[in-house]
Length: 455
Image 1 (cartoon, rainbow, N blue to C red):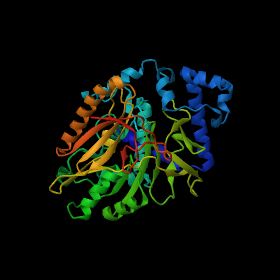
Image 2: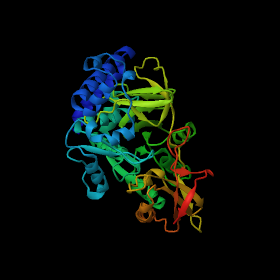
Image 3: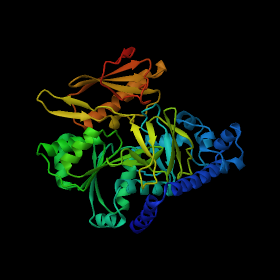
Image 4: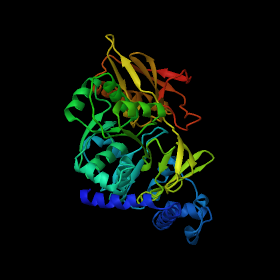
């Protein structure tokens, strides 16, 4: 991304903040109709789905969005090649590309490929061309610098902010890919601090880099805050940007207090990496209506992306839950109270001398092993945990066990958690949480699973 062009395009996107509610609805509807017509013309899946629902091409310009059929991740994966609007995208090729993530290739045939977290089952793939990717990056930059005017943004960026990104930074996680590209686009300096890095290195890395902005998982940022609170670190921050996990009000207050700065909570998903933002005073999450349409029906959330024409997502069900609210006075954007779907604890371990370190759920949930339908973690002791694995095909269990053992040992080695032991237990079925719709990756209660074998 060219720096001057980023500023120019960001200015254009921020102008939408000055629109009236009615002007925003008109803009959103215009983009929606363009997407519906494009999907009809270029996606055999959508044309067939619309026709089966009794929708004609002429009605694309007038029918309410609620009249269109709903899709979900299973439908997307089953009909991937029919749904995308370019002929050269094959799901199995993307899967192979994902398996070779360590090859250093950032794009697949000029497409940005995001590997979904897999928290609701087998991972899926979400593809952005350069135009969609850049539009999404602008949405992320706008959200990260929310409530700042363009003169304030220009002044901030002129100072070459030093940004540390603390999260799962390997693989094809959309957050890591987008944050890296966005930071480069605004000419800032960046440092990745992977959550698998041993805690003993965090202090040295932070002291050496001297960041003045933090982006990352709130549970990981909390650890930095506790280091500051204990006097192990001194940090002078302009802004803290939370993403990838729920941010509760208590944790927000702690971060604001310990870092003495504003905390911005950014909301995105693999399906659309720029959905909304919350700074604490809005009374909810501001939704980017100029980039997506968010619907809520019977407690379910549906996303329609207005900028990704390569892989149209129209009324795509997302397992997060939210409650829509009226816009704030003077703002054109919708608001939502989010019943956040993922709120796992981290796996903390302790050796015999009192040293503590952790495994973060988002660092280990990207395992993609043939035959492994789903899995969870359960803490057993201060240095012992179980992996509960759902493998319906019993003939695959030995191969799954070997690959899972290898990948988990690699993670533990990277974290230098040599004293930690784990066991793999095969279970009949892993079910999502009945309230959130997502399965907790880490069980902290006595939830009973029917164990079949343990290895």
